[in-house]
Amino acid sequence: MSFLNEMIGAGSATLGYLVPFLFVLTLVIFIHELGHFLVARWTGVKVLAFSIGFGPELFGFNDRRGTRWRLAAIPLGGYVRFAGDENAGSAPDVDALARMSPQERRSSFFFAPLPARAAIVAAGPIANFLLAIAIFAGIFMAAGRPVTDAVVDEVEPGSAAAAAGFAPGDLVVDIDGTKISSFGDMQRIVETSADQTLKVTVERGGAPVRLEATPRLKEITDGFGNKMRIGLLGIKRSTNPQNVRVERFGPLEAVAAGAQETWSQVTRTTAYLGRMLVGREPTDQLGGPIRIAKTSGDFASLGFVALLSLAAILSVSIGLLNLVPIPMLDGGHLLFYGIEALRGRPLGPKTQEMGMRIGLALVFALMIFATWNDIVHLSSLG
Image (cartoon, rainbow, N blue to C red; front, side, top):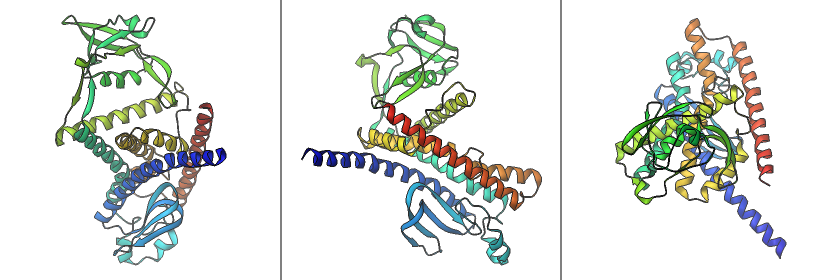
């Protein structure tokens, strides 16, 4: 009986991670590919297939314009295949292109004007950023945004804040020229500024006091046992109810706040990647599908709003990843188009094919590395 209970419990736990994971990933992938699809239709390029996932088709249908909409067995990505494409990576089918009639060429992606091709490719990442803005805006309109004033409640002894001269009761109003309206505003700057000197203005006793503080890079563990390294000053936020409020937003204000939150996610991610590339951050923070699945389950346990927030964060990450100038990714295609604009003609088919093969190898290597990180990460959680 105990064995049966354990099996049922394991199955429930698996569903608790799998269902949120599929919801989040499918939403983000669908919107990304929908960006490509809509701009392709708008520019007159024929779309042969719109696929969520890779591999064997589970089910699908053809629309009135001949596009095959399909759900595939491996839900770790998606693609839009255009007329003239050889594969899901939009590599040109040289033989098929050579056999095309003039009319067929007009609806082919390969023969589309350069601005149209660039717009189609860029539309995917742009759609991801717009999705994040829309989710954050919707959350802010529906539930508001809890805000704690940037009041120092306590300064940890021996911390960077103590060394800088912070005192309980200080109200942080400015960091490096950026206005601080909440404790969260301060955290976003501090977390991505480890070992960098910040010029901070606080209000103390009604008068401005200027301090210089250098956040220290420290490892913390969140409520789900995940470890991360961020910059910390050693300041505890105020728990006084007078310093806590809920901001309410109208539609336009919510969109502006959603754009600001999306930009904050962009700067956090790029700051981490920048530090990683110069060796100031380890690579163990890079996660793959296993970690995304675990994080999805963790966020789902906090409620649907939290899961939507994760979808917005993941959408930003997918958008940024696709802008990396590696062939096979959208950024790689945009790199090719930039070279084409400078040369006045596209790169040769063999050069593009070689670039695609190198890009495919790099993408697979990144996936394997991220998955290995996931396995090591989960093992460290016991």
